[in-house]
Image 1: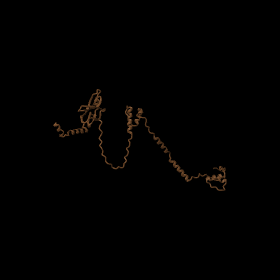
Image 2: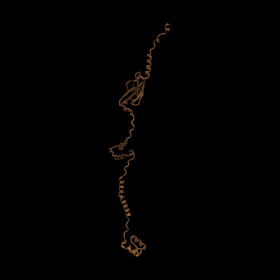
Image 3: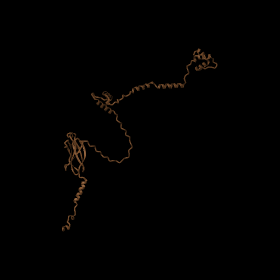
Length: 293
């Protein structure tokens, strides 16, 4: 400060300025002594240096500020720009889309379409591609379980393979199952049955008495159990009954003979046993009283 400005300040103010400037003062100093000391070039010292603790704090704050560089924020902004939202798939059903929309969808899926395809063909191609791209479900890993106690071995019954539905041939077979039941199996080829018009029927004929009866059927391939009489011979014919009520034969089975029933054999045995019983000779002799008479 200049001398004129210092002279305008009181002694107490000058003493305070001297303390700030680090000037040693004495008790008997007058105003002029303070002005000289403060106006001297040595009095215009630089402000006191900060303490070591304050300097360390300032250094740590600067180091923290350097760590949070603006580059990180820039990187985050770049990654956000790079992570563009994926294209949303069209939620509409394929049938509701136009042909141009379907073609663009096929290009996205990498499907090569031929020119001139119809809408239905494009939908089929897209459906196949989506089905192929579906990830297959992973098989669950097998966890080694504790071995159970050994059980008694059960006898395994061998399973026979299923019989075919048809052989593509015309056939009619019959066989006796019980004394009162015959099993019949039939198959008519499609080209054969197309030649006839009428209702399909089985004609069961008793070859001994020539009596017969009809059993209606509805399918060209089938099987059926037919009730018959024991100890008799039968043949089975397959044909149609036309609009005139006439039976037109298509197939005929070989004759089969039903066995004798158990009840009939018992009755026959009893009759034979009764016939074989010999009456005593006394039964045929005439009494004496009658002969004498």
